[in-house]
Image (cartoon, rainbow, N blue to C red; front, side, top):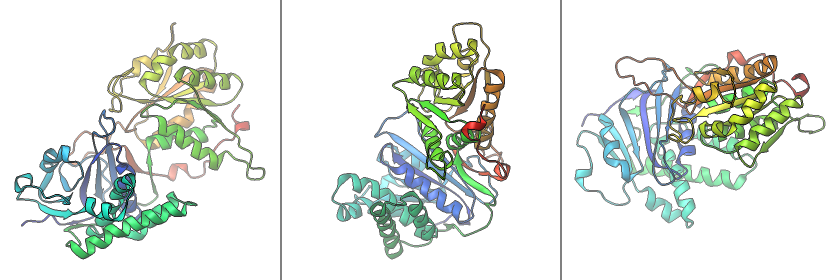
Length: 424
């Protein structure tokens, strides 16, 4: 049978169930490839779903550094029976299907022009773990271990990522390493390793980092002098505030005294959050809130107050599919008018539109300067992908955008985060 063969040039797609813990394992897979010096462009595809419904994670690997989706899949990791038929249709002829064969499937469920890689993941996890939740969570790590053998990904890079993620949590570190090796050992003993597609260590990444728009914007807030974040959890902006917390714990603490020079408050709702941020701005701090379309709808009266009272504040709107409830978590820039005229009076607000994680960093930092110079609210308008343009890649390119990318860090060199006393 024909087999796709390539080195450092493939598309791997994971079909999972939302809420299964697969997202972190799939990102681990992409990060390990990047650590090997090979550019990757992953995209988390999460439609308007709740736990238990389909989700996908697509990783494009190529040394040229293309960011757009290529079209077609070389290796499908099919972990969701609900989407099985459609997932199989995406595999290129001669491509590979990795699946859980703990229960036999009829021949009609497969294609004759693709290569099958069955592994009894459920059976392995049921034998190894007694806790149902552990069986589900470690199943993801087990298949990452198997893929490391099939694609020749250096397991040391994955274990290094584990050590960074679970620093100081020895039990979690060891259990994840165990699951990784469990999958890798099985693949080496029972599967044909490696596949025709494989990863080979390279040096094409250069001076780049692996970051998403929310994390970049959070770091931009630190460099812009923000010392106060008031927020209320809302998809898809919650990770921005969480990233700001982590950055502040590293960059907003006095080394000599251990004193924290920041305040992060989770309000009881969006109204309270923006009110806290405006109050902080009125008292001289650089403050912001992170929200989405429904939050902007609720914050409208307070935004108008800040405008007419001439109080600087920054709002980061990680947009959903429409103003208000719309289509949660789908990418679309539909909050434009809501934010441009937010208030119950005659207002015209300043809006900034970053196209990628690099601009998320710079525009967020600049938003605090603009808010202070104009003494008014300034909104940074991102979306769940934090991208609005991608590099074209010939006729197979599709206009869909990666949520995470490796971005150059050269512009950041020489910069330092502003401290609270430098803000005003």
